[in-house]
Image (cartoon, rainbow, N blue to C red; front, top):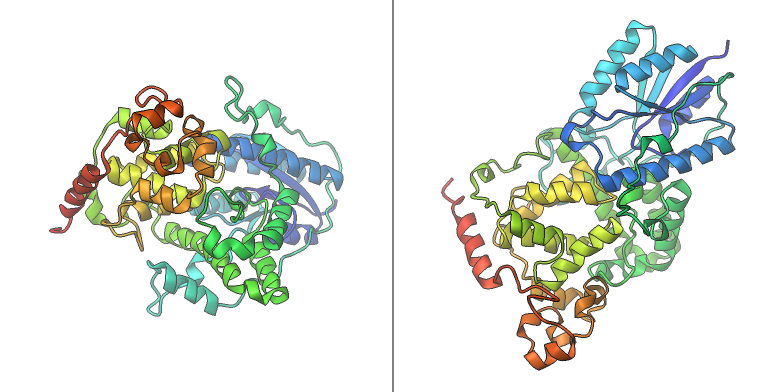
Length: 478
């Protein structure tokens, strides 16, 4: 009987540059499997938008495997029980997988390894979702980094990521193996279908990820250095959902970017800036691995005493894009309608929630977790704590984005705001980001009635800023 291995897909839904899959294929027949463990992650199980991307990624992966004559087995249940049972069904002697770094991942992998060993089966775990393993990058004293710049500098001094691997030749064990139907998992929204139209914006999967990277490096990266802050222009890669689900690997991105530098040296500075954003993703995982409490608790312990407010009405206004501040509302509506938000605008809306409304960063973290296609535990937690002032290498507490100034600076033409807040479409540029200052005649000409067709600001910027500084000032004595 030929040697059989299971390959356990997780957040690595692709076939190329997958060290664990290549290792499994080198040993003989491979049976790929994805386990839908509905209890894994607890409060951080997949949100609605992520389930949409997962469905389409698995559908694409199934089709790619079927083209090679290999099935993808889908099972629902406890991960440990499901993998042990399937391994026994097919007589597998090894289970291969890519390593994960969420707070629950290491314990799951240890428990699974021990349970499989009792059955004479080995668990073989490989890197595959980061450029560098978190424990391999450390300060001179051997401690984890807490500041991004020296962390990324240390990554630059480490051995470069290995070249990406091609899709390995795959063979599958004979005989039919029971598999569930992806459609039966009901990962897609039904009633209502709030993701209607997303398939015209996004195409999950490995081939689409590769195409998106190629288009970005060929057509847009040269504008990345200065243009990445302009939400109305296509200067960002929009690769984050693909990276989140492993439709593409970070080292595929890293090597493609470095190759682009060789062919077009004039783009080097913009490409380096882009790569530093890949570095920020690495930094977030470095922090999550070493400080697994970050999704729930402040990295800076002083913030355990911060006087966060509680106002469900203001929270709903923020979630629904009805704060009365156009750039904030545009971002929140883009998120709801597309499952995505431009990174500059993410910082603006996060600052507004935590510093204008004084609502806990965990409220924003939870909303993003459910609504973002790229909802990633490490990046989400680090990003919210960075803006809120409580994180590692955090934005200073006194940095409070003025939403009017941010709109005027980064959406000068108003294209972004008018797209997502169409009720303001006819307002002149002068008043677009502060409609409350527009004369009544201008509002009437623009078909705007404040308080009816568009809300009044739910807070006054100056008053909110002073309140935030007072609240943050209470931490100084701690």
